Image (cartoon, rainbow, N blue to C red):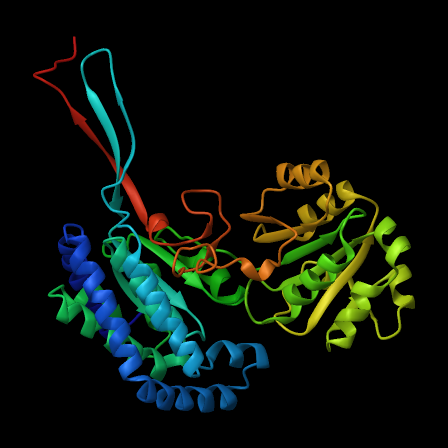
Length: 419
């Protein structure tokens, strides 16, 4: 890592640390005002954002990005409206800082409170999606944290304009502009610099593909909130309602294939298949999905023989793996072997089977009779998310403002001493 990159990281990090100190004490009103001003700026400058996005789309085309990645990168007026709505939604949420999480009295006379507090400085490294610039900035600000954003090279221009709107919001609310900083270069050495910035960054959140997240988890000296892949399963149980199952399976795969909540494997109970035939597979094929499968399901016209690597693979495309299983226990065993602890959905009207599925799987999100595409902080009522965490420490599932808080203990005595 050369001196220029090291000096830039030190400068950005020092500014972030100073901003975090001020943000930790900022009022709820000022933080909300900054987000509302940023939302207004994004909408007022939407044409400028779309022009910048055209440059990014050209860059993505030249780079040979897949259709799914190009979909992540693309902005239109509806998606900009979504950014504005997310900013306003986060602004309207209760301030998570200062919440009393628990309190109790001790026989020795001490009163103890556990209180939510900002983590400090969040580093976010992400690919493609320019909306993450707004989402991550908003959630960090709401939770009293400063944030350093390193967007993907392909979303460089869009992210610059959106970031400028976020800074405008900070300025108008009289909050430090360094509270939301965007790495101003495409130089990949800045990623390494962030991963090693233990003096300046308290936690790193990677949001992107397997390559990016794997790199961060291997190389980071800073703690990481991460999910490696979104290998999401849908299991159609023998007691699934046919029409519900058809709706959910089709939506889970085809609504948007490039999101981490897209279904990548369909498991069908033998008894469901015996009763209803190949309707779920046929629906997918009719919608243009390539169904990779084995055994009995290869008899369904239009299916493709699966390789062993297709199970446990994140396609992020109009492709899905499919398999017949003998009951919920076999479905659970398959998911444990091939899943990534992201999101799984069971389709069933049987309460006992659903309870078993929920109890024996430890993915961050488990659903019943609902599309895996709901694995999203906005859909959970968080306004936005920085990502879906699949680890088991601190944050799991959608990482919103509350999950970007740590806590401290406030202990009150009355001249109390320990014997």
